[in-house]
Length: 367
Image (tube, rainbow, N blue to C red; front, side, top):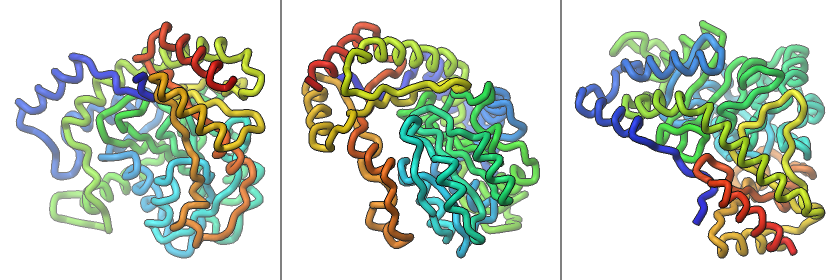
């Protein structure tokens, strides 16, 4: 089976983990061990930001950013429904109301126009998502946020190595959140990071990462235990060095697959708009005017062929049982995409021969 994504682990990561184990320093009381600090510094350089705060998961990064921003009960946060549930989950955990808006059907990211229409007196922030490895249209989002006095938390959990207007994710946001889950463009197994240029915000999130402590046993505010272990940071340091090559390989595979599939008239292929650099976390195609049953049948055929095609995301968050209580939404573009999209493997472990096989198998399946 060709997996939809696969961690690219080599001897460098293995040696780094063994070195940590032999050192006996597995974590740090304030979440700032020597390798965590090293990983944070390296990541700030990669994404060209002032501060990086390492945590144990991408969801923890999102939650820490939301709570650190002061989002509370009675507040509203605007976000797309076409994303992984954690984006909405952390808003609900803070006691705030997630307000779902529709997507741009070309990019699958939040529509700035629909976002602005959803703003109320209770709106405090926007959670944009860089879906499938493509940045959201951040300049108009920033302009709208500034006009209405809103914060922007950018969910960049799928966008390692992407760029927008020659700037990395987070450049137009108050904070960006990253995931290092095993499937991501780079991994620490589990793990996350928050990046920001706001020094006061960064300091607050460092305290909140470790029970609200500035010093051991001196808690200043409500916090959490979101420490990244040293083993995760060691893997992260090794992976970050390899990330540019990983992304380059993804881009090569995506280009080759696109050439194979362009003859399929009933498939809408993903695009890289002008001014964007796609990091191709997922190569997502769409059946034109297709129905869910037909899409699901194609996915089953591909899996029988040994290709782990997957659907992200067949269940938009606003239609999930728990989130229905936040209101009834009719998000046409989101719901259409959920019925028609499916994703194909283009990760660095996929060979050129396998890319060709995937393309031929898709063409055969849609016939």
